[in-house]
Image 1 (cartoon, rainbow, N blue to C red):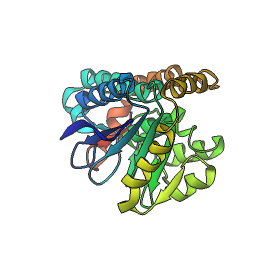
Image 2: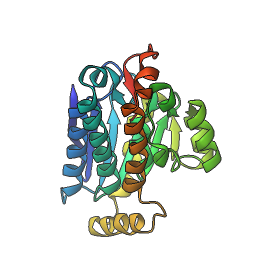
Image 3: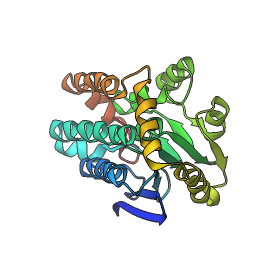
Image 4: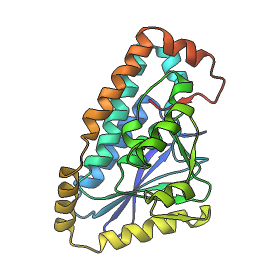
Length: 250
């Protein structure tokens, strides 16, 4: 259980998240994920990083039960941890391919949205159930996966979009059967890793440099409203009515 790294072939590092039962990460999990991705990117022998997960889904956000038990201290930790993990993916010195299966919710959107490419299984669904969890955030990253008006409708309703829908919008590279996801993600990573390593790192910096939105600043702005909702007591009242599995994307 936790975050692990492996190198299935030369030039590729796979960072795998495994927090049963639904990959709702505790505070320490977000920081561990950030460090694993950054460490992989710093390795001069790595030319592409694959971000994957074990279990029922790619990522279900943060652990609500931890926040309910520890209050504002856990909320601050979760917000900082999410910000660091999302930034680690975006700022990774090499391209990052997200291999998404099952549910990709809340914090999962932050990871996938900041990745350089997304490969998804046919059962993958993407969404931000934030308003139902007493939180706000990651619209910054959902806006990188779907058009603006669809992002807003998904955000307000909490509805999810399928991998096929995102493929239609061009934000998912390929949609494959669940069993073929690891191979498909590695295939794309292999194509990327075949390029010159120094040039790839330059390309990553160049592409980040021409982005129209500063994703770190934009996300931190969103998080300010999450704090406001919590300090006012509104978030707690909404969260207490949620009878789900103890997950939330912040």
